[in-house]
Image (cartoon, rainbow, N blue to C red; front, side):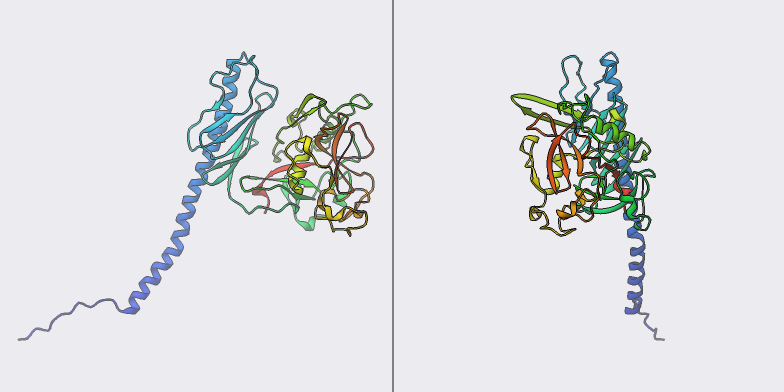
Length: 394
């Protein structure tokens, strides 16, 4: 009897295609989930590292005080972080015992860059730009958060934000009445400036002044010097923003130093002294925006921000590319702003004028970074700058 041979049958082309399709569907579902799990693990590790660094800063304060009879510097201590660790930038005087107090000791991944500040006699610890595992991390108000790299926002990008609630709001909730001088709550219009790839925060400047006019420094009621920095303007800023949200990130200290008549002068604005939730814009920031590349206060080039608008009436309203910096000031439409508002001719910066001891720098309604006397009370107001986490702005 003849036996029929049994042949092994393989998959048909249709069956192979079906298997491939099934595997592809599984991959489409599974791979993103796996990547999300890995990304969340990296994110969690970055946040844990940030918390560990902050804990080391808290331990640093304790060690410093134990080593120095309970004392701690009044100013701000700044640590710059690299792949080699976080190193103290300031050199303190010999009255402090600094043995083993020049670095922060912590475990975990070392950030590739970032700054940590300790201020308010060791009570306030802040970082806004620790770069860890390709995340940018911040620590503020007792919590850590990290984000992945985001697209850089152009100077003058408009956002709507309620500083009392600490939340982004809709353009539909904004009205032009919210841009009137003195308005300091509700859904207001702000502008992002000097954004960079390595930051977890946005810096915003308001589109109007929250006070009418105020002196920069008029302590004696007469002509005073700029050697000690602003006073009245900072006190007024603190009073006017007291109801703003604690979600706003505390302003970093600002230090100005220069030489005048063979004398060296230096002042530091430690905003924590005033309890400020907002700050003033600096002349250095203005020059970074307009691209003049200033290196120090002695090299400030006072003049029109947009050189294409340097003659009264030459620029039509809205024709100045820096109009967002001086909108809502007196007769500013003559120099290309979008909308003018009577009552003040500009606002103070945080910067003194290096070539004159009685002057500070202002943004004026005629598109100038210029200077005026620190005791003047009838011309310049305050335009607040705030810092917020990028995660709350869509």
